[in-house]
Length: 319
Image (cartoon, rainbow, N blue to C red):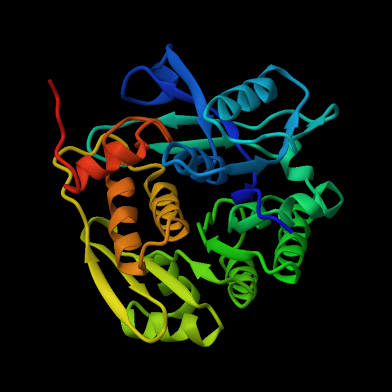
């Protein structure tokens, strides 16, 4: 089968309301509307970098659901497999901003349309048409049926020779630490590319020692690992060789949300273009850093030319 898309991903996207000022939400009266969702963030970032990407989910048959499709389609992402749910609403979230700290996030996603996604909603041929299936640990956390859909999608991909990439993206607001650990480690044993954070690795493996983390994940059968080390950079490894890739300095962080999704997108995009894991780690660091320069979940993701300029690969001409 011809691989029509570079990457397919799926999961819940929500409508995000960001406050117009800092402080407790009870004192905020103005909000701006945008979209949020780890998987659609990756899809948007990869599309801007020049890749062909598909994203699917369930959204409510409401104005918010139509807005999500409109915005993600507008970024060049294929949304042809998104399904409408006439019985359940599209999920929402609100940010609460304070000076010099990460924002508080309030979810209104219980019984959302996306939480009702199930194996029956998967298009087998569509998943098989991709080079890579990208998933996160958020989707199996939102409901039992979404968890079953995630596991079934992995099975479909593996049977078709489609690589599976996975960002654990642990959200303990959605499930218990025990269930998260059990489910995510189970998924890890069936993926090809992994994007763990150092804190997530400690929760999953009980260690922050980089060598131990890489060995433990490789022993599960994972062929490529890009271990996120925050602003320091990342460690990339394919089992035979591990390298530290330094991060990019950002003087003023506007919003760190979406940086990890940008990191995954930069890595996958580079690998699809034929880059080494070291080059991919560098580009991943670059996209992650650029994501923090702009307020919003996906607004800071660069085009490929902008990424080359930011990372010093080409000279930027401003005027």
